Length: 518
Figure 1 (cartoon, rainbow, N blue to C red):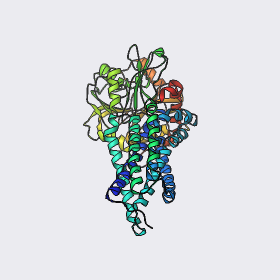
Figure 2 (cartoon, rainbow, N blue to C red):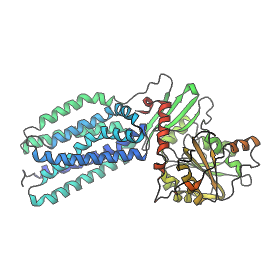
Figure 3 (cartoon, helix red, strand yellow):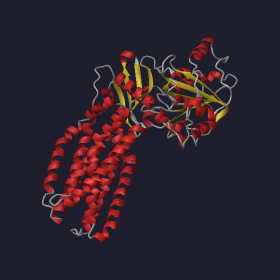
Figure 4 (cartoon, rainbow, N blue to C red):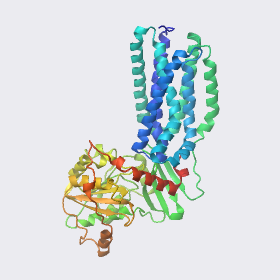
């Protein structure tokens, strides 16, 4: 088994090629979640779909690429890269129609099929590069092990490089669509360079012309692809005041004047809402949270922590009503910026931007009240509702402190997610009480209060009508039906599948699918 030997320049070019295509695979896979998440949410199902589609596409590419590499005489690696480039350029153009077409399939099937249709064509072609490169790098049968090992090592390091460059530098500064367009242009340019080398050095009679043709097609499509970003025209029903793509979601401020409503959304989730006229929060569960400091009249609350800022209304209530200094912990800087600019949030304590599991290890308590309100993309970050996380939060509370957890779920007993949260809280705290945001409704916001001491809702600091209002919202949860949530075993997202489907359909019906697609 012999091939035309590559000279030093050719071998360097080959390694650069597999490194570039390896980086391209990871860029497409990671950006895939940012294109799908605004419509299907940033859930485990979206990530599972993208990873599965990537593996399927690469496996298919390895198989087809091996056969093509053995049989190709007149064309070669450049054509594969050129086709991958063109298909990558088409992704932003096709995103909107494919997401709309897959919407009737529901959350899980829709996320998977949309990922398959959008990303598998280009990923399959990028997967074909490896077998081509191995054949080009192998001079004789005895060296195939070394050649294949080197090629896959270089490709993998390219994937590492692409991941780091995307996550650390490109994504915070450039939109996902622009990155994909830039990647497609780079791959087209690289395909032409490879084609020139193949035709001059490897006697490939059909190399440059096809790649030039693909480049012409790509350049002709480029204006349409660049302009493919959807500009929403709601006819006055919804007015987009602000939108920003961050590392964690597509954050927007949306007004609905007819309902006197301003919303803060992250991907397909509403994480804050207020009256346009008064600026008062329109999320009813926050009315329950606003009464918590009055439950401990013998212990005046002076310091609080909110995990999950939203629009910042709860921090304002604690400050204005009780004079409590409130630290806030929010993972997404775009959410914090929107809360300040459009909802009047003004911090009177630390305004921390970072991941909760990391940051709470660095916080110095004690806090009299901790509000745990993390919800985005139709799902909760399950790792923040485990025994380990709740134990860390208990360590930050004062002896008379209270932890409040907002959890979106169904009240129906057949859904065990609610019971699982109750069971996990019961493992860490001696006492808890549960309240429902809107009595009588199955799908609801549930507020868990957990503390080491008894929780008395008939506090003398509350007015009689406030006590009656709270009692009306008391809700009984049987924790025995739940699963203890730990870092080792945490099926919460699986238990919340029906909730995620229901919430997404609610958002689509309310805002309309047109508003949720970029």
